[in-house]
Length: 455
Image (cartoon, rainbow, N blue to C red; front, side, top):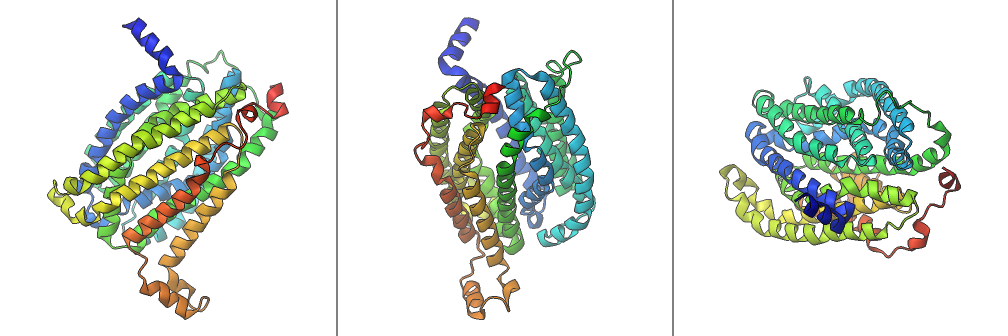
C-alpha cells in the first residue's frame, strides 16, 4: 500500500497530491459548516437578525484591515525565506507578528469602541459585548492565515491538513453550546475559538522547525524588496476589503430583512462550487512562490488551477442551481426564500469568478508582478462607491440634480436581484485579465530582481 501511495504521489505531482488530501479533509469540514450555516445558525438566530451575520463578519475583517496590511509582506517572505532555508528569519518574523498584532489590537479596540454603535444601528442588531467578539474574531482571522502560511512555506502540509480537519468540529462544538444561549454572539464565539485554535496548533507545529536550536535573524536587510512588494498589495487588500464589506453591508442596510436573510442562505450554497480551489490554494501559493524563486516555470500550475476552478466548479454550480428550488422546499422554514432560488446560479458565478481572480492574483504576486493590482483596486473602489451611493442617493440632494435622484429612486435599484447582478458584472470585469494569454511568456517567469538572485 505504501508503495502504491508513493507511486500515486509521483504520478500526481505535489500540487495535486497534497490538494487531494486537503480536498478530502476540507470536504468533511464543509459538511460540518453546511450544517452550521443552513441549520444551526438559522435555528438559533432570529430571521430579522440572520442577514446581519455576513456584514458583521466583513466588519470584523475591516477592523483587522490595518493589521492585515502590516502583515502583507510577512506572508510572501515566509515563503521566500522558507525556500532559501533561512529559518532564523522566519522565527524572527513570527515573533514580530505577535508584537505587531498586540499593538494594532489595542489601537483597533479604541476605534471599534466609537465606530461599532453606528454599525450595529444600521445592521439592526443589539451591541453589548458583541463589539469585542467581532473585533477579536476579525483580528484572529487576520493573524491565523500567516501561521498556516508558515507551515505551507515549510511544506508541512500534514499539519495544515490537521488544522483543516479539526477546525470545523471545534467551531461546531462551541456553537452547539453558545448559539442557543447567546444567538448571534454565540456565532462569533465559535469563529473566535476556531481561529485561535489555528494559531495555537500552527505555533505548536512550528516549534519543531523553529525551536531553541534556531537563532532568530534580522531580516531588514531585505527592506527594499519587502517595501516594493508591500505597497501595491496593501492597495489591493484595502480596496478588496472595502468592496466585500460594502456589498453585504448595503444588502443588510438597504434591503428588507427577508432579502438580506435570503442572500445569507444563497451564499451558503454558492460557496460549494469553489471547494476544490479552497484545497488547491493551500498548496498553490507555496509551490508557485518556490518555483519562481528558484527560476522554474510556473505557468503550467496556474493553468491546472484555473481548469479546476471552472471545470469542477462549473459543473457543481450548475447542479446546485438546478436543485436549489427543490432543496428550498424541503424545509418549511426555508420556503420563504424559495422565490430567490433563481439567484443561486448568479452568486455561484460570482464566487467562481472571484476564485479565478484569487488564483490569478496569487500567481502574479508569487512571481512579484503587480499588473492586476491597480486595475482591480480601481474597480473595487468604484463598485463600492457606486453601490453605496445608489443606496443612499438622498444624501446627495442639493449636490446632484433632483431629476437624477428621482430617476434613481423610481427604478428601485435596491433589490436583491439587481444588486446580485451588479456584483456579478464587476466580478466579471475584474476577472478578465485572468483569461488573457500571458504577455511575458515563460522566459520572464524566472527571477529578474538582482538582489533576489544574489540571495
